[in-house]
Amino acid sequence: MRTELGQGVSPRAPGVRLIVYYKATKAVVCLLLALAITLMIVTGYVQRAQMLAAALRADLVNDWAIKLGELALRWLQASRLWWIVLALLGEAVIGGVEALALQRGYRWGAWLVVAATSLLLPVEVIELSHKTTLVRLTIFLGNLAIVWYLLRRAMKEHHAEHPHYPR
Image 1 (tube, rainbow, N blue to C red):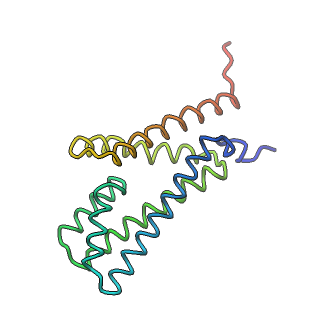
Image 2 (cartoon, helix red, strand yellow):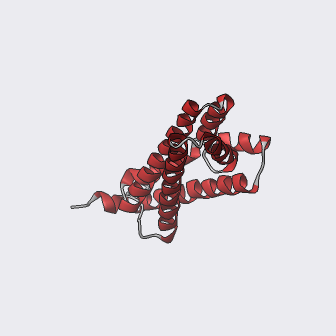
């Protein structure tokens, strides 16, 4: 009996392990940043929370979270900083699910990462055209490499399991 682990991309492949570490680390960092901003808001360090949120907006968060962060920063009110916290938590959950799915070798794991990552690539290109930084360019190229690698690997493993013989 075949398990779902045997049907997904191999979590033992070095490239897949690297992607798992990247996604898991990113999820933890986003979670810690959300916690830091929450603590700053709760303890009255709103101005410092706004500075941290502005720094995150510049380089470190995915484009949907950047847009949400920019919207919140326009108002510059403590209550609106909660949107940045929610965006970071969302980023942490998505990254955590992606890492877990790849690490467990679920068949849908590679496709989830490919879909979630590739959907934002056009937005990242637009963002790069407006403001190019080394961090943004590195993140874009890393995401492009992840999509390319996982797509290639998933297709290769799918064809190995389901060969199509000409008739």
